[in-house]
Image (cartoon, rainbow, N blue to C red; front, side, top):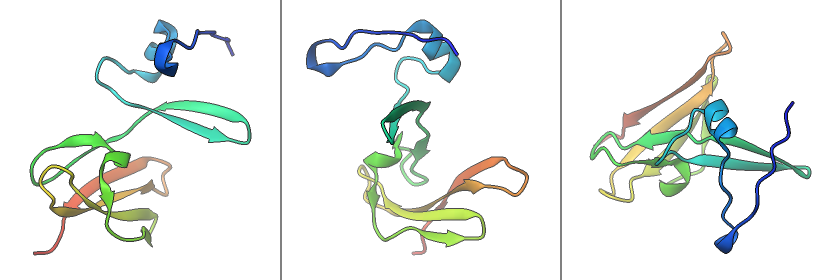
Length: 110
């Protein structure tokens, strides 16, 4: 596995080197998530969620969690509130029995 070193700049900003951007398939305007576990850091392309009402698109962290997540089959369901329009919807994410990662949103009940 290749090692790539970058310098931390002003404001503690870090530039993603070209090889890392290519490996993650990220570009300008995309989000990345930094996962810190047991002293190791993993950088992954962040999944963005799109509000089914107004079309606002952002990472999961930008939406307000309305209630505690719950399990439905192999999904984890999160009830989220859009910061732009304020409407509530459900975000389903999980790994199907086939191993495929699945995620989608549904409008909340009126």
